[in-house]
Length: 316
Image 1 (cartoon, rainbow, N blue to C red):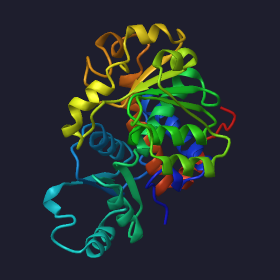
Image 2: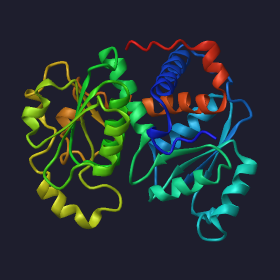
Image 3: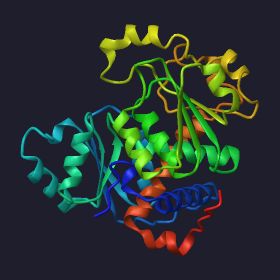
């Protein structure tokens, strides 16, 4: 059974098909078309963490595809009222797939391990694959393709950074993480990328101005993620010189785009002047969450539609 616990679960050609389908569906929607590709299909949204983009984009995207979704919060008692095996196998009797937004990555792995239905990672502490697909889709739209494009991530080597790094490795892009010492990406994660994609260009740096000098996209995220509130003061001190502001953008090429996965702490990791600038793709990037996830859902639940309706350009 196919899952998306992380982007390690799929091959490069499969990612390319998902992204091509995502773009095709976005174009069809812009033309007023909402083909019922997943008519009568049902997905569950099993969430341990609060959400705006992930919940609304999956619910809206599924509705546009002719299907429906069920939001399952704390009231379903996941991990509390009954055993994980009973919970998961029963849920698999009712729905076609589940999107899991979990506090720990092990919870997504546990769900997928029973093979009761396809499991999609809607965010864990380890990675955020749906976000990364939306990010590279945005880069393709703004810059015309993927190959050799350079994403510079200024900030914490967190779950988002790790997913974007893996996604760039799959698409022959470059990735640089710029962060203070002690906030690098997980070494085991980087080792897995290197083993799977030995030609990947993933670099690290500590000087933001030098790092963005040849950037095609400058990406940032909050300095303190959910669950790290006790570290807030220390993180603000550590990242004080890693703000994406007008001075940093002046060191980047004029064509460089600005990305942020949101929510943002304006005035902390990014300034109003930058996030609201003409170089910012942040709102379109957020919108692309829905389009990327629609492509993923169709690929998981009605792959024949992609075979019949989507052309994949592997040269991009």
